[in-house]
Length: 353
Length: 50
Image 1 (cartoon, chains in turn yellow, brown):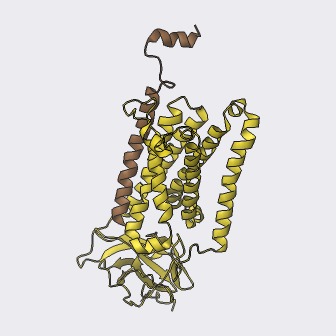
Image 2 (cartoon, chains in turn yellow, brown):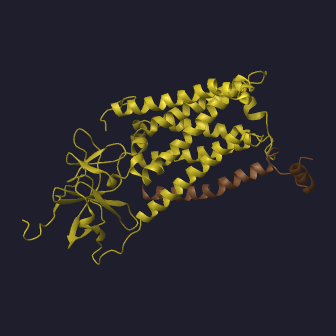
Image 3 (tube, chains in turn brown, orange):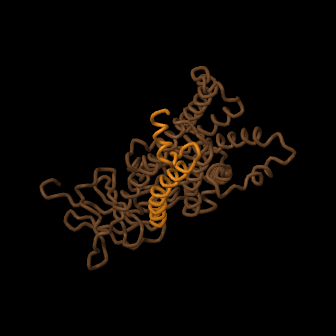
């Protein structure tokens, strides 16, 4: 969390994350450009400018595929959450590598003509009715533009300025960018007789990313199932015995959002299950130092009023919670932001007081 | 994500799960380098190396 915007808010975790990411990208490019040609006569036979654009292009495809896999992986298995923490830097690096690929292409294929490079890129090929020779570059241009918009707006300033729902919708544009990249590679190098390794990379990437997203989507849909409300409108969230100390169980309001009920030091507190930062699953977080902590980026909220501890200003909506035996029930009508609701004391069974 | 975006996500990825593999197969099948010869004798020739 931050109260003031800085270009990049560094911490030790982010530095390690970025160092590993940049080292991995550098290692891929060095191996592709210097080691592979020594091991493969076929690779050595390719002219360096073309080989260089392939190095950046395959690297960008791999990075984008990994960026898209991180989200569903983290939803399906919490061990992948650390990858999500700094995913925006991953996206910016992906854009830079993709832009390097585009620069290498422009500096070679379109550099030896009196026609301006961008004019040649958009106007030299209009074979839209053929698979072979289709102007596949346009899909790449589209994807690069989307990645550029996302890289530019990745900062928390834009997240706050656009509001989280709009920002999140805008950044779902990465799905279209990735699909465009798949078509770019398929209609380009693969359709003109690309090598089996590239085909395996693209087909494998498509299979992995699509499967992960479909699986994660099905799991999310199952979590959105709403039980029949009580006669007074309150809804069952789950059983008290299923809530570990410092954790929550979540339910969904009819037609509304997820609600998380946290158990902490013998009390229950109900808050919105959607983080106000990037709309992460705050209900899957835990209580740290008395505050609910979102598993995505560590944003924190007080249990009693849903407000972030000062000087931070993020807030979650609170809900009334009650116990019917061991059944945890919530009034699905959200309270105004900042409303203070004392945590509900869990009755101590007789003989244990 | 909020509920509306979760629904959009599910819709988008279900569509991509169907459309992208089909597009890949259609493109590669129609590409000069990836298409099988349409005439049977050519396929047989290719298999026998003749």
